[in-house]
Image (cartoon, rainbow, N blue to C red; front, side, top):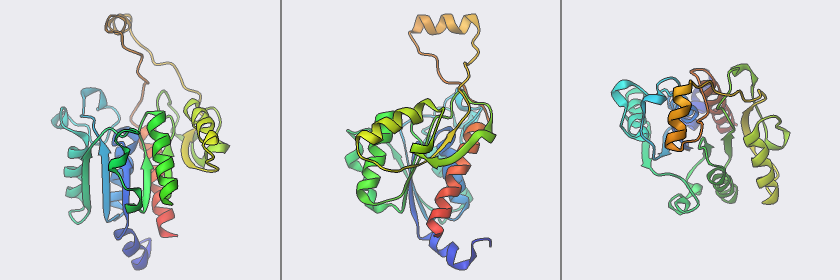
Length: 231
């Protein structure tokens, strides 16, 4: 028992919210369950798709078409039946943010994709006096060794972190713990047929990903949450 009896008891009494249960968030949440966090709220409105199979821990052929939070809850309760898992089918935005009382949480984890949603999570957590950690861009990255934990104002290279720095500075946020990568984003490789299909559908080029980058970012975040809760 590496954290000791007192540490284990502290973790078992903690409640954490994980916003976004995809590539990064799925690994965060599972690591927290395996670390004996007592209660976890999972917030996501997406369903598992075949394109998730290469990187999301909850994505299996048997889970395609199911809500990610429901799949995650079933999986996590199979790991630790005593963990209180609250699966919330919700796309977090400023319009839906009033559904959540951040004062109920001991820690908040942001793993969603939209800048506006990430800003809203940070502002509500700060207002409630609850620690928060955010995942920056993990798409179009290949080197897991370049991920690190830093304050948002000490980040570089990451395009998402750059936008977040500007937006948070305008709102008077002086610090924010994030996990980000210094790797320059690469361009996904598409076939001519795939590009043609996207043009016909009017779809944007989705960020590429792999099996190890989201996992690395997620496990780094989970380790920070556990470390901070044990302080």
